Image 1 (tube, one colour):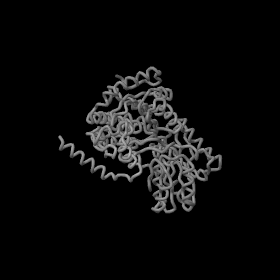
Image 2 (tube, one colour; image 1 turned 90 degrees about the horizontal axis):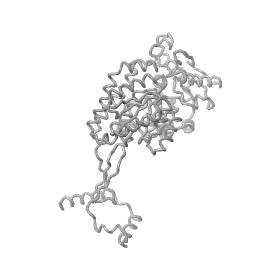
Image 3 (spheres, rainbow, N blue to C red; image 1 turned 90 degrees about the vertical axis):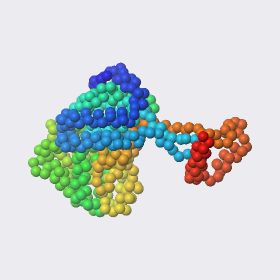
Image 4 (cartoon, one colour; image 1 turned 60 degrees about the vertical axis):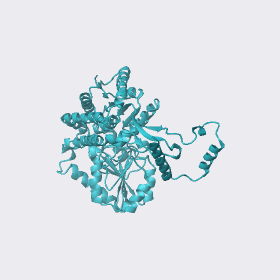
Length: 500
């Protein structure tokens, strides 16, 4: 069976692919941990065997050096290793404590695969974003269809070749194509859908999922604030912020979009940040464009979009501190700092997704709270401060999918025990490690009845006065401590053993 469907597939071809993949789901649900781990390891092994093709594709699309691409592949490898080390503990049934109403019964949670999973991956990190949810879906025993982004066509083709080699049986299948193909896939009755991308498309995915009552995991980014307090180490903060903003050319969902900087250090911070951009990407003074490893924008449309954001801000009175220079033939935009911004500027309304950082001064913590709360809940929020009380305040008075203190962009792909995801418009659900396994599993509650405790007809009609009084007493009385419930359950288990 082919595991790649050609681009511009017809609706009937996409639906036929779904049916073929769905037919594999019942057998996959019965696979052992060892069998699932073998598939996951094979995927990583084949991926790494295609490293040269991956390097070439990424260089063409985003201009990244192999070492930057290795970081992306390493996250996939680490995730696979984490799953391999823990899947045997995740899969078995999990007993749960008894309640007063289930005394004498055995209660447990049984994790079963949801069935057929669709993953609509984005373009800015097509290997880790493409494969990480897939690893968790396979670990949970699902059949999977992956659609890479058409905006990274070279990587999409490489992903398709990797999957075709690693999964000739089709339990993981790649469908290539654009928006029309995505719509055709969303018309199929998947059991769970992953989508990584922007909020506008995420809402459309969620609406389509509703037609089949499919569960969703959406990671949608947004405008991530970085709060720089008066006590922050300016040099250290500037170095880390420059690195975080320029990661992948700024085309990262967790990169800081704007910095809320205490007014007392605004100018020193801006100057330090400008120096850092130069130190990191133009150290020899030959210009950013002369750096062969300087990241570029994914395509002409996004290049023009980012340029329009900068020029809109410039036309409305913003100060371009540094950058704001373009090389259209290379899709290159120099690191740009924008000060004196206002709410009517598009750069403060839209996710930038490029090498641009806006700086907004503030005077009080309460100002920061109002400013962040007045916008959609961010995927990530960063706090730079030496004042623990200030750090605690900002955490307590804000919400985000993740928060990093005194650094940025280090929370994704670095710790498989941490859940990754957003809040409302920045995301729904959680990924990485156990969390992806759980998203792709149906946690099925199972209760096994035991020997009757007293008269088994007590709970059926006609109800006795004694039973009615027992329920009334439970309703008005104090709750029975869980320790006593567990003690009674233990006694009943012992009694059952001895009665045998």
